[in-house]
Amino acid sequence: MRKTTTKLWIGIGTVALLGAGAAQAATMGAADHGTHHPAAQAPYQMAATQGGEGGEGGEGGEAGHEHDVFSKVSADEALVGRLLMLKGHLQVGWSLYEAGRPDDAAPHFLHPAEEIYKDIKKPLSGKKIPQFEKELGALATLVKQKKPAAEVAPKHAAVLETVNKAIGKAGKDNARFVMNVVPAVLDQAQDEYKEALEGGRIANAVEYQDAGGFVLAARDYANGHAKALGAKDAAAQGKLTEYLGELAKAFPAAVPPQAPVMEHGAFQATVSRIELLKGSFR
Image 1: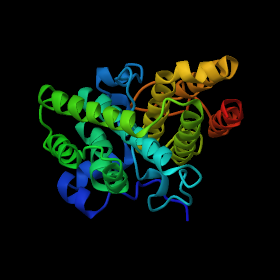
Image 2: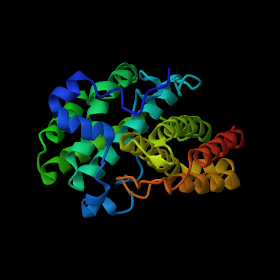
Image 3: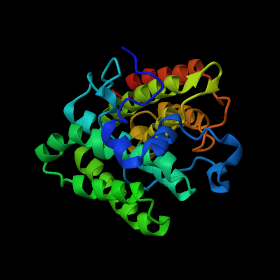
């Protein structure tokens, strides 16, 4: 069963913590397109940390999705992919929070803390990678309390650094490994992007933001391993960079435009081209 345009992971606990009005704003996204905070109009460039990767977990198998995008990869690759998606949430969440949109940002901090972490907790322990559940929860609490951005910023940066370190320990600087992870994350992104669109418009801002966060986290990860990818197949690595750049253009700002920059069919086709590149890195 496909999920509806209302994010299923925003449950009773989240509603109670945010309040009905804020939870509605989080699920429906920024409906007030005519009253954006000026900073939210800036290009959707979420703070990419050089040399590290982070991500998310849980989305590939959460309730409402009909398949687990990590079902065909190794346990280590799944862990890295989920961490990348977690990173994507944190980055898009911060982009919105810093722009003065705490209600829109809240789902992207609450989802990792309430849903995603349970899917990476055991794998982290298995690889003896330090847990960061408490830090993630504390960050989500600050966001829920709408603390000043200057107070939230260092906590966000610390959690993001921890996520990046976890990716570094869980992953491999290996072209095949990277190209098993990236297409899986992008498969989830195209699923989210599809759910964001309805009737030729972006009807669900949260899904759009999820997709954008995952794309940019995957691109950051691929860029961080460009040397290993290029050593295996320089031409294919160049195409990968090109295709990832095309996907990133679908997200000009954290607050979505009413009409999509890229139709889902074109988005999915680009993801498929990246999937086909996997053979070049075996």
